Length: 209
Image (cartoon, rainbow, N blue to C red; front, top):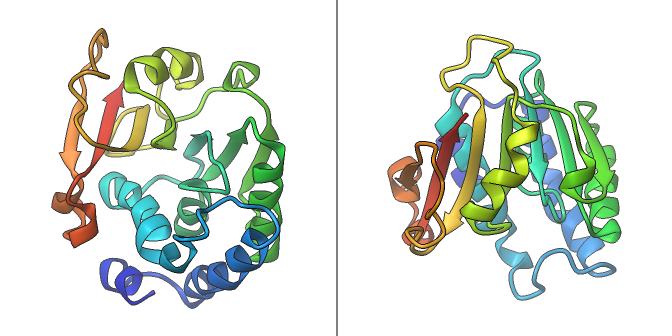
């Protein structure tokens, strides 16, 4: 929590309380349904919450009504931390594994998030368009970009800094998985966004549409 406060001093008391509640909620749910590696649950804030919020550091302030699709959200990352951060934006979280969507939905309900909807299904079943599609290490870029093309808005709804597109968190060498993508690919080493030691081999990737 201290690192979250460090990077985001503008957070309200309500937002801080919501972030603080995640530790107990995820620990409890993870004991029943494994959505985070049990070896990693103790690192919830640095490895999952703060990692997700790197997208907020990149996008900056967003216009109210901006919409995001979290593709392959698992237990709610990056969607839930981002939905807390952007209470004026709309989020739709989708995953093929029903029990993971259940956990994410229950946690969002427990902390009073009212700007999030959930879908148990495949991305092919989601036809709506969003300002941004976000994800965390779901699949290689050259597979992900064609899949979500239909879900990216053709025009931004508000005066956001970045035009609609894909914003995802990746690790490792992206050269091979970027082959065949015709769009511009903006790769930013994560330490340039958040200089945390455990982000050394990670990156944020933005693909504008």
